Picture 1: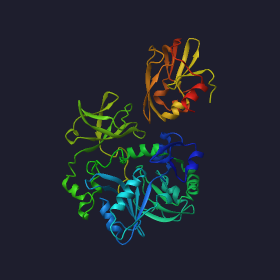
Picture 2 (picture 1 turned 120 degrees about the horizontal axis):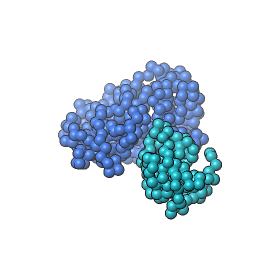
Picture 3 (picture 1 turned 90 degrees about the horizontal axis):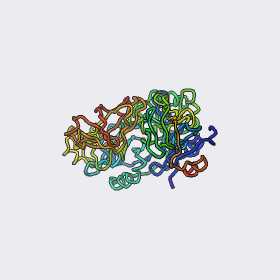
Picture 4 (picture 1 turned 135 degrees about the vertical axis):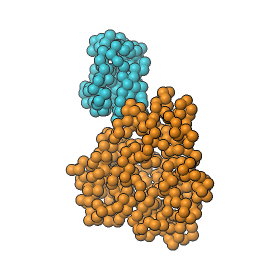
Length: 362
Length: 125
C-alpha cells in the first residue's frame, strides 16, 4: 500500500485526484492542472512535497563525505546556503540529483522520493569514517509556496526576513508558529519558498498558508502542475530526463560539475569526457499549438532516428508543445522532427529553459 | 449535473443524446476527469459520415491523445466551434456546453449502448 504524507487528509478534503507516485499517494491536481499552473506563474501555488527524502550527514568528516558523494563543490557553502548537484556513480552515471544544504551540524541532502532507498544505500556505502548518516524523510514534511506572490504570503506569517532571503538560502524560524527551515528554493521556475517542518504541525501550516494566501490568489497545486511548470523551466526530472546511464555533461549539467575541487565519485570518468562534446545532447524542442510531444516519442533527423523525447507536453504559458530530448551530437544541428503517432512533426531547437528560469540556478 | 436519462454511453466513454433522427455526441464526465485538461480536439467537418464504432476524431489532453469513437451512425450537421477557443468546456460541462458534434440521418449501429448506471458500473465508478 502506498505511503501517505502528513497532509493526506487535506488532499482528500480538497477533493484532489490522487495518484501513486514513488510509493506515495499524492495529489495529481485539485481542480484543473491549467488553473494550478497559471496560478503559480501569475500568483502562487501551494505544494505538498513531503514525499521527498531528507538525509542528514553529520560528524567531523561530513564535509569530506559530501564532497566525495556529489559533483558540485559544497566547500564554499555557508550555513543555510544550498546548491543543486548530481550524485554520480563510478562511471559518471547519475545516481540522483539533489539539493545540498549546509546546516548547523553538517549537511542536509534532499533527494528524490523515487531514489531514496538507492541513495541511502549508496551514501551509506561511501561514508568516510567520522560521518554519521540519518534518514529524516519520515520525520520531515515539505511544503512549497511558489509564484510571484509566494514570498509576500509567507512573510505575513513569520518574523524572519524571508523577503530578504537570497535565492538558494535558508534560515530556521517559525512560520505560523510552526518551526521550519525556510528556504528560497523551488522546482517551478518561479520565485518561492520551501518549508521543511515536522509532520505533526504540517496540516496547521498548510491551513495557515492557504488562509494567508487566499487574498493573493494562492491555491493548492498538485504534481501535474509541478511537472508542467518544471518542464517549462527546463528543470530535469530524475528517471525521465536522467538516470544511471546518463552523465551530467550529456544532460546539460556541466555547470554543476566542479572537477577542480578534488576527487569525487565519478570524477575520473568525467575527466575523460569533453564537457562541450558529450556522448549525447540534451536539447529543447518547440512544436506547434496542436502538436504535443510525449515522453518516449522518437526524434528524427529526416528519416534517421536521432534520439528520444525524455519529457514533453503542452506549455500552458507558451501555448504550444514543448519537449526535452536526447539527440546524437552529429544530428543535433540537423532539422529535427518528433514522431507523433506516425507523423514526423517538425520541431524547432530552442534554448532551455523554455520559460523564465531566473530561480533555478545558484 | 444535468438529467442524463436521455443519454446513452459507449464503453469507450462517448455519450449520445438522440432526438428522432438527430443526435448530439460528447464524452462522459468520467472520461474528462480521467483525461484532465483538454488542450485541443480534432473533430470532423460538417457533412462527414460517422459510422457507429468507428473513429471519428481525437482529443488531446494534458495526459494523452485519445481517439473518439462514434456511438451511432450519422452525418455531421454541426461542430462545436466554441471548443477551438475554449476546449476546457469539455472539462467543465461535458454533457452540455462541451458537446462535440451534432448528427443528422442517425441510424442505430451495431453498438450496444449503455445507460448511465450501466456505464458508470462498467467504468468502475
